Length: 279
Image 1: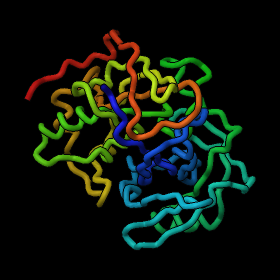
Image 2 (image 1 turned 120 degrees about the vertical axis):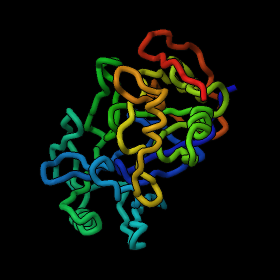
Image 3 (image 1 turned 180 degrees about the vertical axis):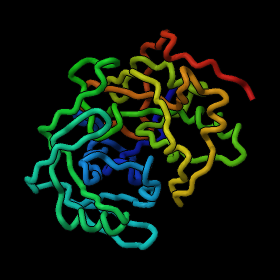
Image 4 (image 1 turned 45 degrees about the vertical axis):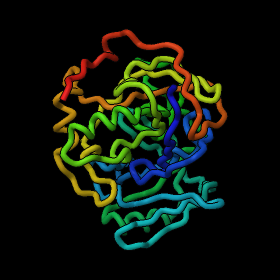
């Protein structure tokens, strides 16, 4: 049996995540997941790829506020979960442009000071529709400020297999998944096509290509060659390194840790098959 073991949201893109016992699913992914984003002077998104210290900004939700804490200075800012600022900006994330709302001058000043660079915080309002990649999904699937898709799933067995190959084990937060499950073989998620969790339908649409963020320690922002070096020895296809699978979904509701993942169909296309090497 496949069972949900961990659930995560990342309210502000590329900052620390929040571990949940129960998650609400909206039209574009988990509630609050990547609905906020930091942008530069060109209105382009900022991530750990170019600013590793963002890993040290931890997030939590209490009442009507999202709290962000800079763990280096122990300073925090509270951000209302209901954005009322009507200052509209056209922002860029990868090849997409989206309509976003400014959050507040206070938030802009706080992040600018904390990161040491001109930074503004924006929010994706409900009427902004950002669509997933039509090459891999239908034209009407939504996502938030995620890289491309509303969910990413990893099997605990996959992490366990990787850690057996590493000198120093890594926690799951290095890979920033939304859904983690137990059961099955390592890299079982690669071939998951259609499945349900608590009667909500999901489809695996694309293996998750990994960037340099997986080399950033999410507790101290230091970088190393791992796990990229090890993954490159057995998880590469077409010159890209893969770990996890991107998902789309159909319907809304809630899923919880402990729920069964009921696998309905599996992929057999070559693009989902990575032949593993043994240790």
